[in-house]
Image 1 (cartoon, rainbow, N blue to C red):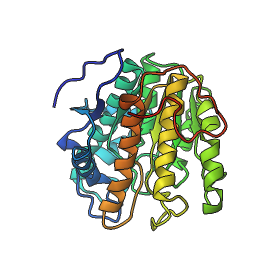
Image 2: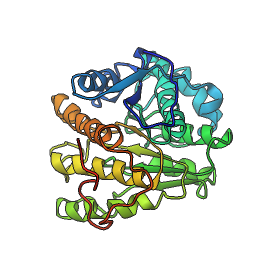
Image 3: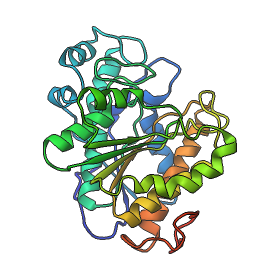
Length: 313
């Protein structure tokens, strides 16, 4: 594990921000608190090149840019229940590192102008002064606010392809009046049925284009839209893989840096969820490492684009 050294040249490996401190056993239904190490271990078995970097943890002040100070105090002191509805100090201790991984990945993506990964989950249901749905702090909004407040970006996109609406994300955007600087999109109202799967995939280039004026996109590559997920149910494994490939390829040709995370996924055994996250990493590697560097060149067919025009090695 090493310290990040951002590069503006073509990527030869995918930067992944991970440390053991991100891990916790929530004791609940969701595997998200203990998933980072499992995802990383699975990726390390793939024929890809990646660089594991320890993230910087976020501070209390970073949390307070996105959440009410009393809420932050209550969570970190374990006086309020976390998103798993318990008071486990191990979960509280992991939170500065999970949001820290997201922020570190975002900074790296901005620096290398392409991509970085935080293998974390449990963000988008956490609102300004509440949590739930296995989400305690909203690391997406913690990241967005940290970058905006420091002038590292002027506008950020949140592309949330989890199965469920990011109600906490929208709550923070609305309460802090961030609608002009944080562009939030989730397909849940527009697309959520198997019959609309192809229409959803066809729409992804236009969806990504909504973020063309953003300096960065935070992408939630959720596994829970899988048709067999107990909390999801409308996309097949190949369709999820195509979803991710399209997001990465479209963002790349538009020159929009992307920092992505794992988001939801509840199938058992967890190997089924990890297989989906493996496909996301494969798509990421294919677009940003395997493919020739074609940033800024639009594909020939913008409306129906299943594979990048430059192909794969």
